[in-house]
Length: 325
Image (cartoon, rainbow, N blue to C red; front, top):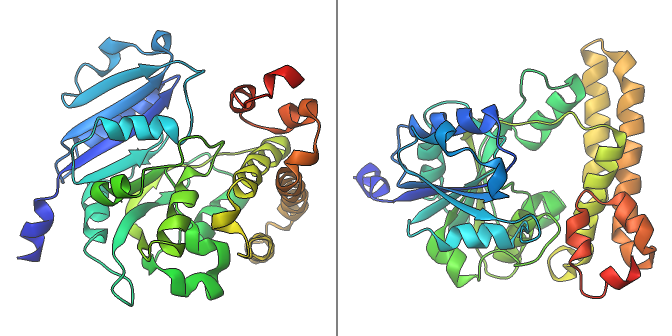
């Protein structure tokens, strides 16, 4: 009986796209093969010239909308995609995340049948990210640390034990209850990064809702970032936290990073890969320096911010920022 009720939920998948390649084609084909029906796949593509219609003609339920690079925003563009959806559940994905099997969508939908310990409503459910075949060993462990084998539902009660991990969620592949999403006003309309955790933080901290981690829902997704890429990513991450103290203030975060470093080193030693430890230490140092710089970005000169960020176009749209360049 419960399964029939779940089957009634309609699903749209929303994918911001930039410079599509074979990975997107594989992603769309695996979505088309899902056991759970997808109403529409809504692609919001940045720059019309990069999109080749004939490559994706065989995806029957694909709908494409185009924006310019200047118009793109992590939160705003996803809100635009949500505006095209009429489904019960919206699944946001990135264009480099590939479903691991045919059960991805069904597992995400099932996560909404859960609730928190005190009856909190699950309003978003994020998938487990598995490393790609070319993923480095240390990054493979990071995947397993952030995306373990066991599912869980996170609520305000977890803040003391989990700290900032309570808000952890990823729009690499994350499903949202559309009605709750609209009631909350969607994502922050303008943000450099981290729109998923900002949404989760507000849902848990202020709306008394719950976030589900659905380990049975799996996608392949990983990056082999170098030191400066990690620095810039963590800079932007910290900027988003500094801009939203209402969500992140008073929530411990640095200790979680230290715990990850210690666990990664211990794992490498246990795997007799001790020569990889110095690289982990150095890269972790770059992550931490990027994070500290991002937290203090308001005291940095404009030229340095542009060197530190992964998203220069975001800053160039900041009111008053252009005149300082």
